[in-house]
Length: 265
Length: 224
View (tube, rainbow over the protein chains, first blue to last red):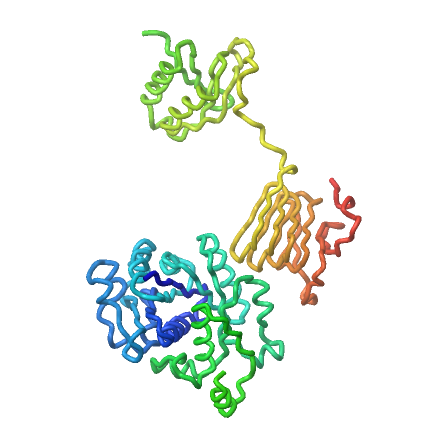
């Protein structure tokens, strides 16, 4: 099996890389693909919390890199979805504990075992970022519709182009339809005009995400979440399905959401 | 001991390494190597001029000499055909030119065909042509003119350091900052949207002005 290794990165922190990594991994797993989410944010690990697997960590990425355990032993299998897995980062070390070479080796192993390896990268463009992209076949850039996030995304795209990464996709996160409509937020054509890369998806602002990620639940597994729906669509697009972008509309309350759900949209 | 065939002297132009080229090349190479071996620390990183007398030198000869020099970290600045105070016949015409004169920057054009993204810097001694966008946070710099066949949203610095006649043009002109020679300008706050038609920046009466590109005026900008 030759799986795909996809790194999720952004430059700027707090734009939703970890939430994206967790939810898209889960959505892919739900679609029957064997998926593993890898946390490369050594020293500031979060992915385990968002995925609700914190209390099951025994070994981590640095243990694998330093030869204290085999890769297999560090990977945690999710009990909700048998196809979903996670490889946690070490919390008590820093980025220098991993090297791009070591990451490439691990990615080669993961590629042979999983359909999808989703690598969550730390914020920034230093060593941790270089580790995260070392083994990637594809890269997803997550940005929010803020000028500063877009500026950083642009910087990262430049670095990825210099590293000769060919497939780079854009995800616009936390879009607030009402603000775009009022002209208070950059709209999608403006963002695409500057970044000029392929758009993989748009995720609406959804307070569901705050609730679920604090509880270690995954919004993409919850049919009532509009963001969860968008994550699922992104997973399907990664699988090559032609899924149209969700119309950017305001959240019209529970009733409309339920109606949408019944219509199967 | 025979007269040394390798001799080092200081001149107004720097170190001069003179080779008495009266023996076959392989022997000369051995002697050169022996000479360099005596003080490797001195020669490592040293810049020298080479004097080879009046013997015709082929490209292959030069390459072999270069290999030996490189091994000791010697940087070859050039080949001196004949030095002051030394009476030698002029070098034969067959000698290849080893020291090309630097080209006039005004004739140099650097072409960049891509999106220049935030944090990237493209610099050229001569003219700079970008086919693509210059994004916010990117910097393009040229000794002469800058032409952006795309959107200019970053910073552009033309006419470095003091070429007042330099111009900056873009199809979509929305820079964060402009500099021409010693002048700095930023677009006025009251211009939220660039018109989206080609514009041009130049210096007029000691200030940078931006104006619409007018057909047929190309020659006007060819000043200085």
